[in-house]
Amino acid sequence: MSGGLAGAARAARDATTAMPTLELASGQPDFRQAREGSVWTDIDGRVCGRSYIGRDRRWLDWFETGVLAFTDRSPRVQVWPASGVTLDDVEAEFERMLRSIVLQAQGWQALHAGAALTPDGAVLFCGPTGSGKSTTAYAFGQIGWRQLADDQVVWRFDGRRARMLQLPFTPVLPPISQVHLAGPAAPLRHSGGDGLIPIVAIYVLHQRTGRDRPAAISRIPPARAFSQLLPYAHCFDVKVEATRSFTGDYLTLAHDVPVFTLAYSPDLERLPELMHAIVSSASGMEPAPVDVLARSR
Image (cartoon, rainbow, N blue to C red; front, side):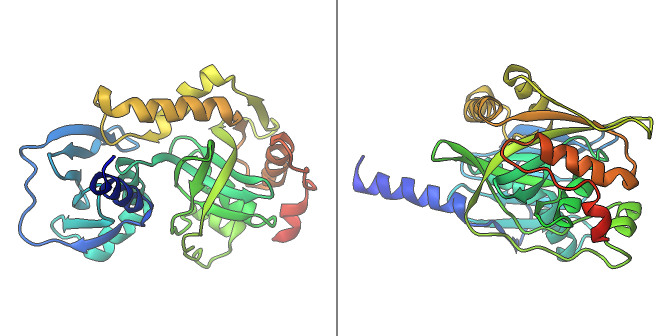
């Protein structure tokens, strides 16, 4: 590779490690010549956003927020806010959801998940909206571990190991969870961390009825873990050629990292039991006392 091409390749890689930031754009966005990449739906199944791939730019049309445009070569993300939407509103949605989608388009992988830092590395909690990802990740912060993500996890392979990058986030807890875990004050915003954190386990959360039923955790075979994780993975461009890296990374993730299904009753009084079950199942971690969370409140 010539020096010029090598320099361009290094610049592209460096751009993907820089944190994307918003800047207000002028004029009107125009992505009429770009092809459609992917479609996002909300909890009710309604389309809430679409991605587009142009010759030199990528676009994200997030209907209730605005239009974003960016390239692979720069961390700067231009934004045209939707009518009646302030830049502060866009920044809040960018932090909550859109930054991870941009990073996925720039070479990372992005998973709809919460995360907590354990002595061995990051434990991820994924599942549909309302499954308890945020509450579970936040609760780990109250037993001495640190919450790493509330709703979005960005990761990649580094040194042949899956590692996540901590992004800035603000925990968003359901009102009942906030009262139970954090009191009436709103949770504080967390700034991003330095370096990449190895992922040591992933839990797919499922709530079930029956408050007297204990939490049940079982290991998902790698061949099935791949299909279990895909519904929670962001993919900016679903064209076959563009999904090779996406598919390969998730196949390897499912093979290399233990993936568990976690079925539990959404009873906040039983959170200590849930924490104990998770800690006991993750390889290399010592089980915490069952009442440790209750003592921390």
